[in-house]
Length: 206
Length: 206
Image 1: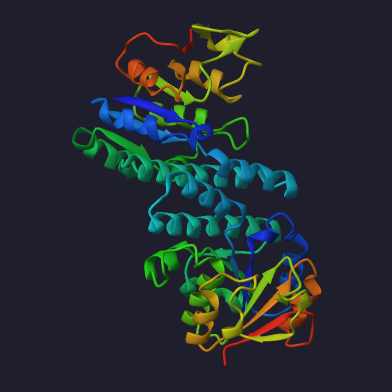
Image 2: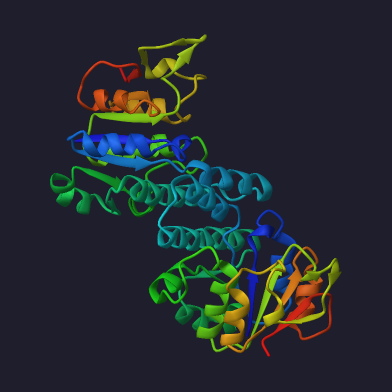
């Protein structure tokens, strides 16, 4: 079973990716990012200086909205609990987690903008006992000085982009491996899911 | 008890209004608009040509997000059911309805962009047996040929702005009266709530 987080940057461009995931024949759990909805929360937060816990909760609820959209666009079933996903994943193949129920009920993460859907997806992976996560975004991977990195250690990632601030240390804490890959090339994501080589950045935790 | 719909156009400018409502000493139920969150749904809908029912549901869920924000910004309690609001309104004075539970469970409205939070608020008013609703927006009322109208009949409203397409006929069907008022001047809203004269447009249904 593969855990694939689809970043909100793909909100308006996710259809080919979702189609490819649905048709690739692998078991996949999709965690949505908060996308432009979460950006509205950021703006509101800047306007009113919200309690960080409130922003955190609202941003998580935005992930549900994007999940509903991905479900509709990709004709993929959505689920609110891991219980339901585990019962049905063999049958449906690809499932979207609407994560607010899980994330708010467990409340494992720091309440700050250092934690976005990247880190939150790691908590989901941890609860599923997975050792890998695929972070799908709209760039080819992580760059350093203009050069795409094939592999990087989590402890070297600070200051580089593509994942949130809390992600590297969480990845290490959970001893997981992450791949950052460009969802505008769905075939790359499918290759990663099938364990084949492709253009991406692998983040190792040790 | 007064029903006040606060439009999403005030998302970033609602604090003085919420403060005034909280302090005015009247019993008020606030229904939030979907604001910029709902605009993201419109964009997504334009991109993917979503099923109208899906857009309708997502836009309603956006009203909850705005309601949570108004609750935090105004330090006003939020409620998911009329049952809970009715039990507490005497105690709390001002309450915010997070309307998705009510609106999706009853499913009374047409699933189209003709119905926005204006019309949806009418359904809430109807369920509360209210005869009036106050629509708070960021303009002084309804204009015709550049002139602010003090009063207009619902059947003359077509083509003018400030309320959604379905609103006039619903108002007539429910035999209700609406006031459109500028929330950037909180004292106007308070005056309306107290039954005093102020700058606004009254929409009568017969």
